Length: 115
Image 1 (cartoon, rainbow, N blue to C red):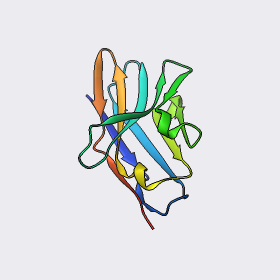
Image 2 (cartoon, rainbow, N blue to C red):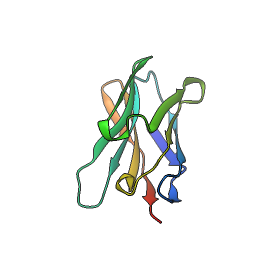
Image 3 (cartoon, helix red, strand yellow):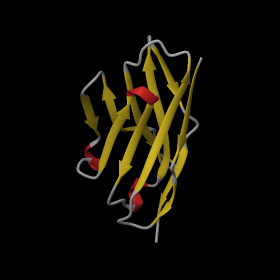
């Protein structure tokens, strides 16, 4: 079983920054991909950023140039540096991991951007 624990969410003013972390633990044979999704109230969950394989990175258009995803393989940790935050970034952010044909999800961390 794989467990994902996110941290780093909170309340921030527009234009501010936050850094999310997600640590994976448990029986992990290989990681095909790790990434971040988010779900705002009344909306569907959407992909924010994802690292596929060793070097392929994709971002949703609305965060390009503002968010940076990175991964520490030795620590089984993925990060999301969020800069120039906007009120529309407000959502619950979920970490996801793909391994051996299965997808695992964290419990989510709330990010609120408001003045």
